[in-house]
Length: 474
Image (tube, rainbow, N blue to C red; front, top):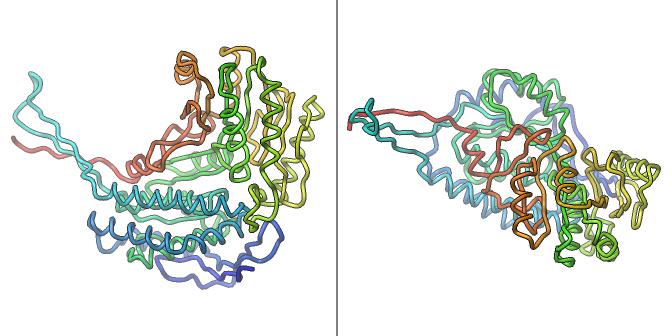
């Protein structure tokens, strides 16, 4: 059994002194995973002041070297990090190990991008109003970023927020989820160990009004990047004031399986999309939309496939699906399924809950207005709905308030192009799960899934900077 960790909030590398201690429990067995010393408003104030005051300005090569060293340290300690991720989140070890790999990629791509010249050149003698000059652009780091991260990816969500800021030269204050703070703090400690100047990053856990709201409202903070619920995201947008706001607010992503789909591929993608990470991903498959002509054959194969997703102790190497984040979340999902059944849905597999552990659950005959498909169900649920043709599939996909990602399974190029053009989402993946991407590619949604601002290393580095232009005679 893993020894309980003792961690603390850090104000620019200095451990916080406080009597307020947070206990982090394992969702599977309620054992103590670790403790965190909490921060308060004065610590948040200090973190802002130190970041704004600044320190040594890092060259591109120095930023590269620090991120590369952090990447190497993460590789050396990936098992240690994976065990912490699994213990505090309840995710199966295979998911925790996979997450360290994704985080490695973020560090690698950010290190590479930190070396690149980001400027452009515009000749001015290209119109009758022009003259013999050239305009040059460069990107300057912002004074301070605040990043607020959720529980579902305790490491990768954190690196996606703070590493592009560091690669850009922008100081950052991290406020991770209080449900999974230990991994986030371990990453910050890794950055310090790799040589990052302490003024460049602080990590603060504390009461919402004392820490998060104070940081969001402070005018010295130039950008707030948040991933989490729609309600909290919209509150941040309303209260942040005159600053950049980047919101990634979840999704209700469909996988759309057309009549001509490769059946084995469709079944595999639907299962992986529904159950990986215990279904707790904004890009997880939340709705399986199947052409009515193949729904019976698909459902039969999908139920059999789902039986292989073993649910149990996250620390057991044989476990494929661990817990959701806590028992309250599992109870909510259980109730969502029960409500759908009252409306006429039928549970074909799973549905049993033990504490925070919820079996992968296949539900057929799901009404189009059921809560589980109108709103985001953050867990290992696989609701199956049918459609009659491509027009119906597009209308059904677009019928919710979300617009993050989608996956399409088809061999018909004309259909693929129609989906790409007509789905109101940020991503359309053909013959792949909705969540497929690489860590440097643009990622983000529209509607209630976000403001249309993209994440991914390259795009994130843009929103942590501003463009300065200058011109010279030429």
